[in-house]
Amino acid sequence: MDPVQSLTHFAPELILLGTAFTILFLDLFLANKKALAVLALLGTVAALAFVRYPTEPLPLFYGHFVLDPFSFFFKVMALGIVAVILCASISAPVAYFGEFNALFLFLGLGLILMGSSNNLLMIFLSIEFVSVLSYLLVGFQKKNPRSKEAALKYLLFGSVASGIMLFGMSFLYGLTGQIDLNLIHAGLESSAVSRSLVLASLFLVMVGFGFKISMAPFHMWAPDVYEGAPTPVTAFLTVGPKALGFAVFIRVLHTSFFEFHAEWSTIIAALSMLTMTVGNVTAISQNNIKRLLGYSSIAQAGYILMGLAVSNQTGVTGVLIYLAAYAFTNLGAFICVIAASNHSGSDEIESYAGFSQRSPFLAFAFTLFLLSLAGIPPFAGFIGKYFVFAAAIEGGFYALAIVAALNSAVAAFYYFRIVRQMYLVPAPSVEPMPRSIPLFVLVLITLTGIIVMGLFPSPFIEFVQKALIL
Image 1 (tube, one colour):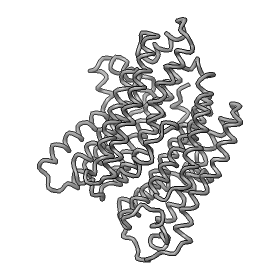
Image 2 (cartoon, rainbow, N blue to C red):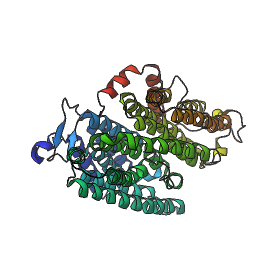
Image 3 (cartoon, one colour):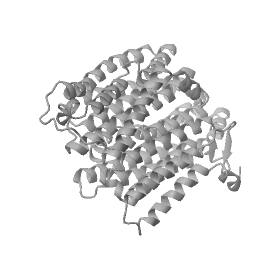
Image 4 (spheres, rainbow, N blue to C red):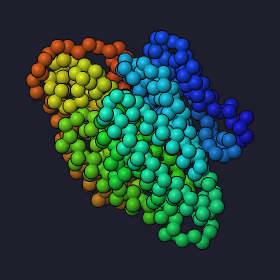
């Protein structure tokens, strides 16, 4: 489809782009900067309202992008995540800068492009677009030394990972002479290329994806970045780039490399075990809530990789359901963290002592989010874990399932450590927390999401199965 025709299917992206530039322009004249945050949120909601479900795959811009049920699923997820983060950050000091809100809208555009990209060039450009914007947001608090240090570490690790990924992509182009994912598949299938060279190029490309989803051993940047970034940015990084990183990973593996499934599934299974073990074991010793949830995020990536390693229908269904459940759960948990840190001025776990007395509702909601992260029924996290465990057992990955079960027990320990701090450790002060209406509404929405998804999973499962790439 040519560019003019493609633009008719590009309405959400154009709305995000137009709103972002409008905010940058109005920032020069408006004294009330909070209005810009509200405008950014309205622009994201408008973009979400214009998302249309495609009845058949549509190649856009000469096939550089594809609009299909798979990209639709991740487009809705990306816009929903951006809308939640913008709403959560309305009361934060960083939200009073027009650039902060505009950067998040550009990030939403970048995430959508990641989920729709159908060739190596656009995959690389969209990933780099999201990465550069993420570096800027992590270092947005220019006077905060931790924020600057986190941004520098993120930039250095990201640059190395991008260089390795690009080297792998150049390998693939050299082997097939193509950058389109479907044509690469045809080239690898028909030409007498060495399987070892193909797997070497895939491993190099996997480094870039591993960086985006914080997969071990490419996770070293995550804890420091999550701790140093503004808390709304941390919440976004643990969910947005991770989800869309998995989207690109799935599309590349299933479109171009499915013939090599026997080789890469073993590699991903091993990386899955390493990722969940490193994340969970290291989280035990953390005293900062953002670092703890950062290592938890690494461990969650390990569980999601279980479904990708198997890559049968149950496995890919599990990956998408887990990502949706994780988005609801982790966003809700971080909204509680934002509310708590706004009141106490601290991100240390010790500051949550007696949290149940200062804010009974938030403490209760935070507990439910932690239970969902631990995979305890009847919450959304249990449904995600059920599918990835079922996929591992169905595919004969028994060692992977056993390691994941042991890791789930370890994770429950440090999640309940936070619950203990909130309910069993006396508070130094019982002064009630002031209630922020936007944060209260978001907690209600995400809490409803994990409960409804856990109790009535069938509509979510049916929606996900229509979006599968197999």
